[in-house]
Image (cartoon, rainbow, N blue to C red; front, side):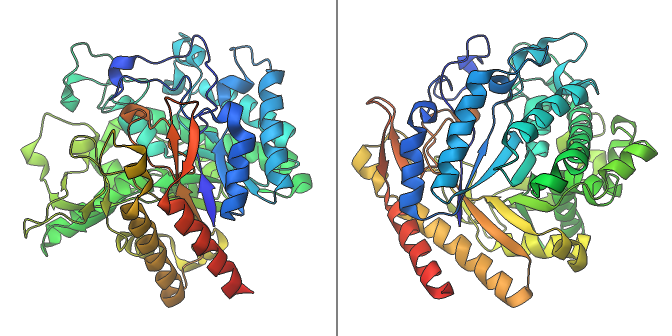
Length: 472
């Protein structure tokens, strides 16, 4: 069993800050959980829990702080220290190369334009190759990207995540718009997929034979439950998974986008060349899967939104969390205004079954699945430390997730080889800021970022101990 954390190293990086007005609580990631200064203590926490792996991401800007690609030795030293400490404690590092923190100079460059042009491929490959070269003797599990569909949709379609690009068609309440919600999400995902394939090719040709590691990608999807027994709602639920998971995974396993996307998105969906398709197909050794929750889906025929074509209308579906009986799909695990997770552990086995039906048992035996994220936020914001530590709902959430996953593996033989909890610590949760807490450990942001184990940390330690005893 494993833990997961975004690269919130938390030493201020001047010149690469977002706007506070886009963050729910007005906070920034300048300090966040202060892992940069407290990583030794944090690794001790991991060792105390008894985990055997830790997933974290490397900050691109900390390794390559300028567009020339020069390597920052201070950043290298930090990650070497983290990796060496993990290995010393018997904890396997799983390294994500990109978790939504594009260097600002690449976004601002008038030729590169961030993820919006293919020029980004050269820069990403330089960063990836640098990491393989510097850390690959100890890092044996690489993840190129985390949740590409989320990056593309929220960053370039809905505009709530960096870089906040969108157009009026998305329904945002912004006063100023820049971007194109109808096309940019597809362009961004396309260029990032090319980056993935190119980085995997570099790793396999120049590093994997000697380092003997493996490389994959983390995709994400909710489980989408049909609102009714109507065939149209089943079709809409199927499309929603295609637009979230298969949008990224189909090109990597099949070499092209889902046919439903090509039919609906049409000319706004970029086309892979024959060489690009060949390079993409089979470009992973394992599949990282992030699963949190489930939603209901109803069919939304295209004729209802003929002039509002972007991601949400392209999939021709209406998504919600209240069922035909008027009840929530699962227990709400977050506050009403920013919560999005409902306790639906039954959705993960259904999603695994959907993937097996689409990609085939043989394909998934050859490319094992690792659950690279699962967890939940606290129901209430700004509670006392004492109340936050008694996170019984998180214990129930994780316990039920693991129980359903274990039963699915035993009953259906799904090739799932690991499970990462999100997350070790409370941290900076993107547009939700610092008040949205996912950690097994409470971080007191006002008093030296001191860590306190929650009830979930104690439960997880006991769970891992029992699991190890049973396996012996």
